[in-house]
Length: 403
Image (cartoon, rainbow, N blue to C red):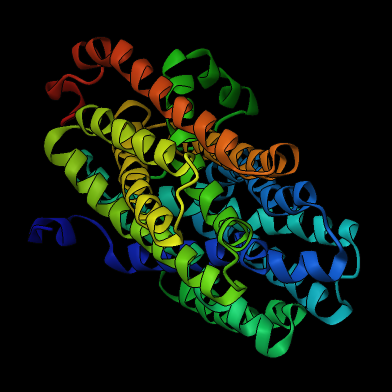
């Protein structure tokens, strides 16, 4: 990262956006690492387990659009503060009152979706401070907060074993409160925030076919990342008989790989162009997911392939968001919400699909293979728009950056 990057924007806001995103994502996927314990105590089926870990992803996806609207109308900092208070209140109620049925855990899952909607706040909060040629790096650093999913996988199973899984909801409140105070103290809205639009203007962007392409591309990259982050603890437990703590460690390795590579993917896209990066990354990610879907005989083999797959998906997340601000800079709030919504829906489909794949076929191969095919379809789609993008809005003299 060159020195000009740190002078171009507002580092305290970038750090605040990262921390807010990080802890929100930790909570967003919290039911995944706890799923083995919860399913055992509540007597859930494989399909119910898949639906339980997938529901926060779907709720977060839909709420991202709502948060995108709030970002443009209330500005990012205030919208983020509201979201954090709702999540902390939901966790406090779950901790103090307890969760005793599948219905109650599903209700909590919906509220945890508010944490997933942080995506639509943290990225524009950081992005609006930086010029076009630093968008990949800025969005990558803020977006690296998805490493919070690794924190959940690493610590939640051990805490559940020591204190009970319901206590984990209360323990999560401490770091959330600390980050909330940091956020209030250091985050600042950019003076370049565009004026709020009428609600009809948010629907207008959907008439642009490029918006749908970006939604599909992120549905694959972030959908793969978030769906696997929520499901891998259950996968390693079911497929290889690992205990929840060890399965959580394996999941954390995979998620750390994807999270740490997101800013690298954004910076790489700044250097060589987001399109070129994504063409390579979709190919590699598809190959890794297809390999895992072949039911590898040893857990370490699956772990190796999944770490590699998450690396490419994480880099792909950064590359997609190097492109989005170039095409929709004035609509970045609503586009972040729309693209983030599509990513969450992709995660829901993958996580729920893995659960149903296990219940209907006895394994996870079908679900993984279908998603690998979806990554190849994204590759074909990107190839089909490459020439048009590079000769219209993506021309260097227009975008001000490589696409």
